[in-house]
Image (cartoon, rainbow, N blue to C red; front, side, top):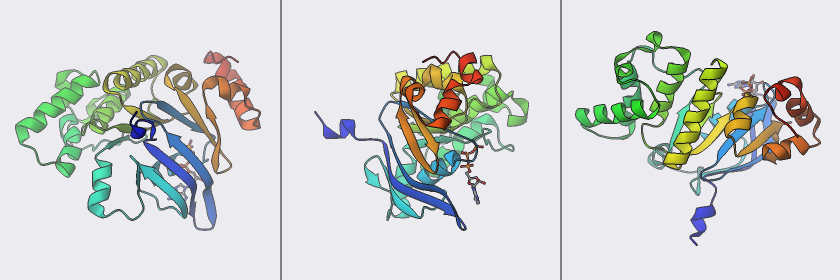
Length: 258
Ligand SMILES: Nc1ncnc2c1ncn2[C@@H]1O[C@H](COP(=O)(O)OP(=O)(O)OP(=O)(O)O)[C@@H](O)[C@H]1O
């Protein structure tokens, strides 16, 4: 069998990231396996967004290595890094669409940045992505201010999928959605994973999402990943934060059971 079949898409070793004198991440190891939906959890301020941004090259690290698609990201030229960036899509917290652009134009931003395509082809790709995330065709001509929270998330996901990425990074994709909207969005992510073979790295506080769609969970505390595994593994873990998080009232309400 091809050895690359088992190679993690993302591999982080002994990562340290800090601001000023404060180390937020210190000695963090994490692998993201091809085709999995990985849920990244941790208390507020534990560094989930910082970790994500560091993997994406938006925050510098102090120490450690980050590999994406088998390549060490250190020492890549700008062109080589851009080639890596083309293989991932990102949905930042709150959608982060450009408010002055329509949904179609937002989806076309990465196409313009990374590819040279004709206008009709870009329109066709935008149409496909809009359909893929379950938006109506007329959503393409709307501005973000004209969309509901759930539609904004879908539009942002369509933009994250614009370049047919192998992995998408989602930062709290269901935050701000009502339970029905959140469940529909989870179903969409799962469907995209199943149909496109997408790998999903998802920062979330949403226990329903974790239980519903994550194959594996990575828990952050004390600057590192303190545990990885299935929901069942999390429920058995002795770490006090995990016991509180997965054993609390909210977890019971989400139907999370040992
Ligand atoms: N650019 C920055 N400069 C200084 N400190 C920062 C910067 N970015 C993040 N931090 C700090 O790093 C810590 C981790 O922040 P981060 O946003 O990663 O937390 P988080 O785990 O994603 O939290 P939440 O679940 O609340 O979104 C916080 O204390 C934050 O204030």
